[in-house]
Amino acid sequence: MSDEQPGVRWRGEGRVTGGDAVWWTGGLDPRRPRPLTVVVTGALGGPERHLPLLKRLVRRGHAVVATSPPTAHHSGLPLSRLIDRFAPLAVTDRACVIGFDLGGIPALAAAAADERIRVTQVVGTPVARLFDEPELLLSLPTRNLDALVRATGAPRRELLPEALGGFALRAEMLYPLPGLVRVAYAADDPLTPPQDLALLRLALANSEFRAFPGGDGAAPEGGPLRRWLVAGARTARRRALR
Image (cartoon, rainbow, N blue to C red):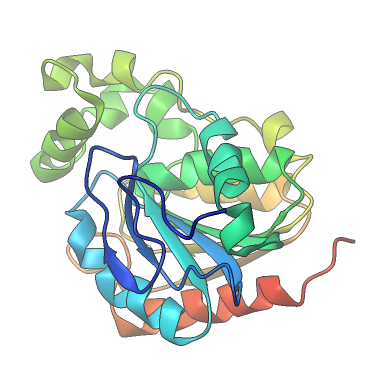
């Protein structure tokens, strides 16, 4: 198999062009495969803000693929197919998936059905309440609403509840998840209401929760979060299913 395919850069680090859902790769090398970490960027903020994390993961010995989340539903199939696609170029039997805000939803859905995903890490991810209560969703700060409109393609803010209606995760969808789930949140982040955190604590068999300062109602970010995520990705390398 050739080291390269059209539109995708397998070696080194770089932004992927050509309209691919994969927008950045690093550390992929079929001669010396590394453990795979998939990073699913979210709706809030530009994807470039994740570059420090992506590069840190590569420096710590991971093959890294960054992709955008699906915009219509919470299916985990795209992520499982992505892992299939990179199997010749990375070690995929103990993969880690990291999802930011909306990107955490397909990450959790994929982990519930794909035993190769040993560790799932979500950051500022809404689970159910915002999607079930339109008035709560529409009360989000304007910057969040505008970001969600751009991410979903909704014609206007008032139609966001309809555009996001297929994203809610239920307890019965999370019960089968066999791997470790690590949840990063900020106490004042409106995207992660206490009810969602309670649902995750109840439904997940194996989980860790870490509160980070977000500031001004924002999701966690910064150096401490990046170090925590890298530590979780390293856990996936040595984790066996229970």
